[in-house]
Amino acid sequence: MPLVSIVVPTYKEAENLQALCESVDQVLGAENLAYELLIVDDQSPDDTVNIARSLAEKYPLRLIQPAGRSRDLSLSVLDGIREASSDVVVVMDADLSHPVTKIPQLVAAVEEDTFVAGSRYAKGGKFDRGWSFWRFLNSWFATLMALPFTSCSDPMTGFFALRKQDLNELKRFRPIGYKIALELMVRGEFKKIVEIPIEFKDRAVGKSKMNLQQQINYLRHLRRLYLYKFRAWAEFIHYGAVGASGFVVDVSCYYLLQLFGIDHRAARAISFWPAVSWNWALNRITTFGERERRPRARQWFEFVATSLIGYSLNWGIYVTLTSSSEFFDQYRILALMSGIVGASIFNFTASTLFVYSEKRGS
Image 1: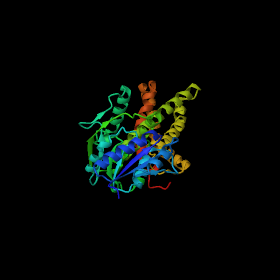
Image 2 (image 1 turned 60 degrees about the vertical axis):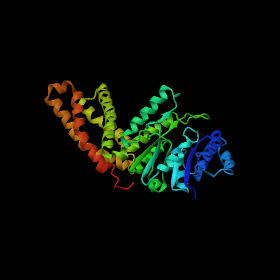
Image 3 (image 1 turned 90 degrees about the vertical axis):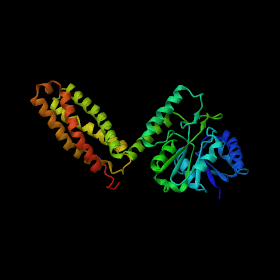
Image 4 (image 1 turned 135 degrees about the vertical axis):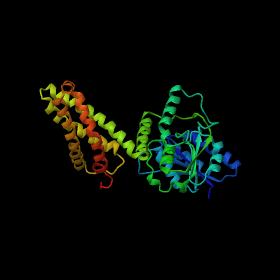
């Protein structure tokens, strides 16, 4: 049994595998540290698979080719951890941006319920000074958005170590994209995070996998984690944001109908329907997207039914204000907004406890 399993997710990294194997074998051999190298290939169209098979004849390398799922490097890491023979697992990139010489330090720091992160931003850590301002700003902003989750100074790291048994059931992890470390730190609920300073270098061969789609996936991943970590507050804020977009739909329809000669009271009643349908669909996909899915028609009806109660309050406030106050009759948009605010708390409570309740079957 190896003392450490090194998991390396790959996608089009054929040109880096030889150097990676040589570096790992040299460093860990000098430390008398038994290891296995798990190359988890994410359906690479280049020669990664053939080169990995060839290197397996010389090095303690295992090639893993996951099947039956969409391409995703984070899922490849989970597949590698699942297949690891050792309880101590190190995860790193194949492009030699992570210092192989730090692996023994990461392994030595692994304890029960401890996540060991190779950090660019810990004291003594460095990153490539050749980075463009845009790349540095992108990394800084991504790190800033993740800070509410963890005390780790570099939650974006792809170089880390942990004990396999501390992860328990791997099916509970739901990463998107490439920032698997943040997923493990948040959902893994480690009692301690240890940071080992590293010098991060830009890849010398091949192209970075960072693109617009990966950045979008990161934002989607953050949304999931915020809902997981700060459930009630995150849902309320998200629900409010959806409601704000529904408000735009509502007001647009309200004024558009009046342009066609419909009385403002009737326009107010009609504009409710496209807005409530918009809110239902967006909340189903985003705000409560982590909850069990129920039949659309039934859930839409329930959302409308509960919203009608809130709408009664909304419409009542609107009519009362515009009928009894010359000011609100002149500035009807303020009366409309007052009604919306009055109904929002009720609607959120009803949606949380009834419409999108996890207690109901899908």
